Amino acid sequence: MKQALVDDTEDVSLDFGNEEELAFRKAKIRHPLATFFHLFFRVSATVTYVCCDWFSRSFVGCFVTVLLLLSFDFWSVKNVTGRLMVGLRWWNQIDEDGKSHWIFEARKVTPNNMAATEAEARIFWLGLVICPMIWIVFFFSTLFSLKLKWLALVIAGISLQAANLYGYILCKMGGESDISKVTASFLSQTVFQTACSDFQKPGLEGLEIHQH
Image 1 (cartoon, one colour):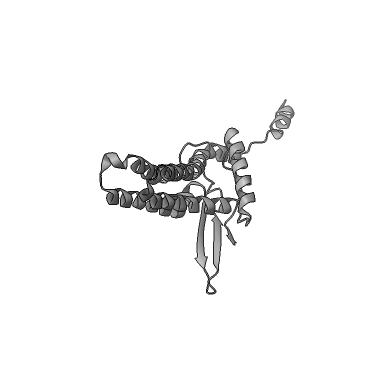
Image 2: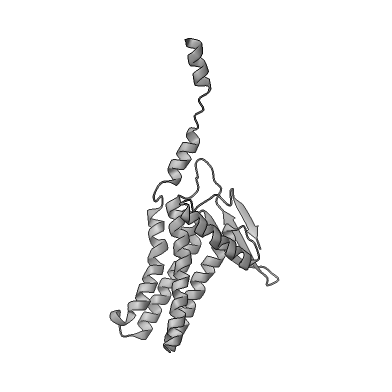
C-alpha cells in the first residue's frame, strides 16, 4: 500500500511558477495610472478637436490646447506608458556625423519583473493604432470641407501619433528596417492574437538594445 502511494506521487508534477505567471498575465490591470494616461491625452485631444466650437470660439485657444494635449500624449507614451505597459522603449539619436539612429530596448523578463498583462498590452496597442487612423480621417474631412486653418493641427496630430506607432512597431519587431514588411507582419499578428485573446507574447525577451 505504501509503495503504491509512493509510485502515484512520483508521477505528479507540480509547476507553481507557470501557474503564477499565467495568473499574473490574466490579471486585468497592473498599472492603472499609466493605462489611464495612455488613453487620456489622446482621447482628450480628439474630443477637444471635435468639440472645440462648443468649448470656445477662439481658434488660437483651441489650436494651442489640442497641440499641448498631443505633445503630452507623445511624451507620456514614448517615455512612460510604453515602458510600464508592454516593457518596450525607443528613441532616436543623432551621432557626430549627423546620421540618425533608432534605438530599441525591451524590458528583461524575470520572476521578479514579469511581462505586461494581456489587458494592458491590448489597451496599449489598440490605442496606439486606432488614434492615428482617426486623425487621418480628420485630415481628409478637413481637406474636403476646405477648413484649411485646421490642416496644420491635423498634420501635427498625425505626425506625433504616427511617430510613436512607427517607433513601437519597430521596437516590437526587433528593429527590422523594412517598414512595409514590419507593418504587414505586425497588423496580421495583432489581428490574429486579438481574435485568440492572447495579444501579448514575449517577443523580445531580456534587456536587448537594437540600434538601426
